[in-house]
Image 1 (tube, rainbow, N blue to C red):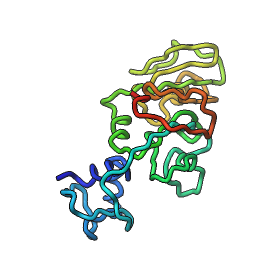
Image 2: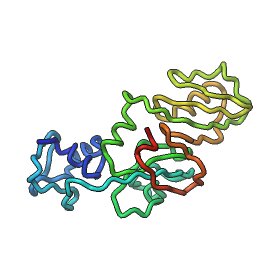
Image 3: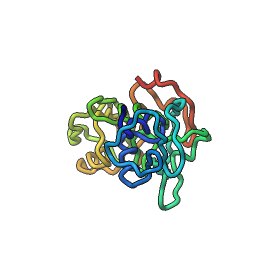
Image 4: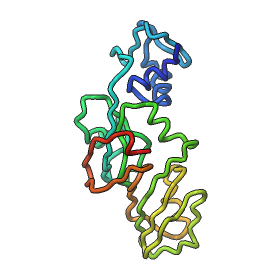
Length: 212
C-alpha cells in the first residue's frame, strides 16, 4: 500500500507537497469519498481529483523553459496573468519545479514527475542553481554576504553566483544589503542543465539525464 500523495505524484498530478495541498483542500477522492491526509491505497481503488479519475502511471515528460519577465512561475494564477505552463503545448498536465520571481527570468523545468520535483527542490540534495546578476552599479564583492552560496565571478556590474539554497528574493536582498539594486536576474543553470541558446518564451524537451 502507498500513501495517496505518493500515488498522485507518481501519476504526474502534482508533487507530494502539492498533492498534500489539494487533498487538504478536499479536491481528492478515493472510491468517491473525500480523501484525507495520510490515506493509503493498494492500487485497486478509484482515485480522483476534481472529479477526474487518475490513472496510476503516466509517461513522464521533462521540458526546459526560458521563463520571461512578467510571467508567473506557477500553473495557476488568480489574477489571470501569463503562466509558465502556458508556454508548452503538451497534452499532459505539467507543473513547474521551483519558482522564479515575477521580475526574474531564465531556466525553469516543467514536468509531470512528482518524485523528480521533490528531489530537485528539497534542500538535502543541494542541487546547484547558477544565476547571472546585473546591478545598477559596480559590484564590490567584499560587501556581499552570500552565506553558504558561492560567488563564481564578478565583472563590473555583473556577477555569477551559484546557489545551494534559495530563500525568497535572496539574491535581491543580499544585493540590497550591499547597496545595489538588481536590474536583471537570470537563471542560467539547474544542476547540469544549462539555459543555452533558449530565448525568452522558448522551450525544449529534455531527458532527465541532462539534469544530473
